[in-house]
Length: 191
Image (cartoon, rainbow, N blue to C red; front, side, top):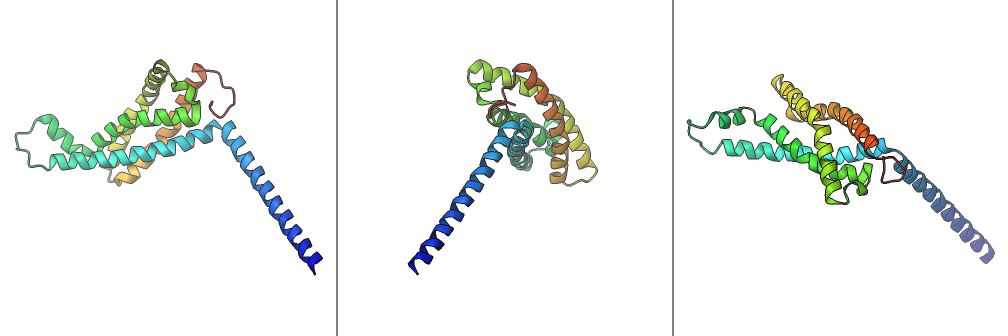
């Protein structure tokens, strides 16, 4: 009986070992795919950045609405009245401006490589490139989002719909800038 038990234990150990090897092979394949696929890394970076953006947008909207409900006198400036009337677009625009810094960092970490921001000069240069790349979608997205809101589209749907469209444009523009700014070596830190 002991021989049967040993055979069963060895069989179990072999199966467990094979499972570990299969898991390792899958893990290795996933890491290799991650390293070689800048599009996949850009999507992951974008999802994280857009979640931060969405949170900033909602937080800023609450701040703007709370600020505008503080019983300010009817003599408020034209700018203040305009901000109150367009609170959702103002929060979107300001959140987008702030999120570019977050998205820039995430793109450096996940897509283009941390070496793209290792020095102050590299950081500021690549941040300026990010603002340049995102400026068109910042303006266009704000206008599209405002239009969707005026048409009665709920804010969350307007936000994510606008972001989905803008993300495609941003990917193409950033990949163009990234390709021109440095050669790709195909490592995990390069696009």
